[in-house]
View (tube, rainbow, N blue to C red):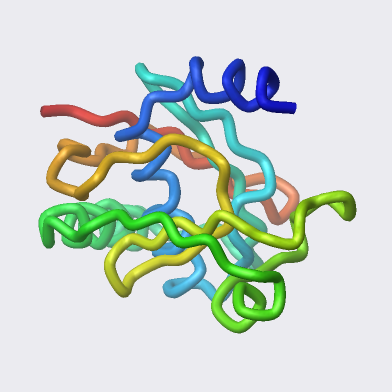
Length: 152
């Protein structure tokens, strides 16, 4: 199991992974949708899929980018907590967790903006992320695919 975690973490880019958490929370707040259930996170560019009732306008997409950068620019601390299932379910959605997960969960908090169960690597502060840039989006069959990158 530890080897699997190490292999998983080796490939991650903490600034991009943390930006994904902020994007997920921004989408949930703006659209009331669940966090991305299909994400591909890489150093150069990443993508996340969201289930939405209708395609967002160009203005709304620009607002997503603006809000994500607004959160990043707050220089929020990124903190790791270890909570029991009972404690965690009060603040995070546990529906994506596998059944065989341990009783103690690793919760990643980004200031007061986001909390999520996650085993990945993250920055210590959002000031380490850089600038979030939406590259493009496409919408089909109720799925919005968002492609993004980070710049200095």
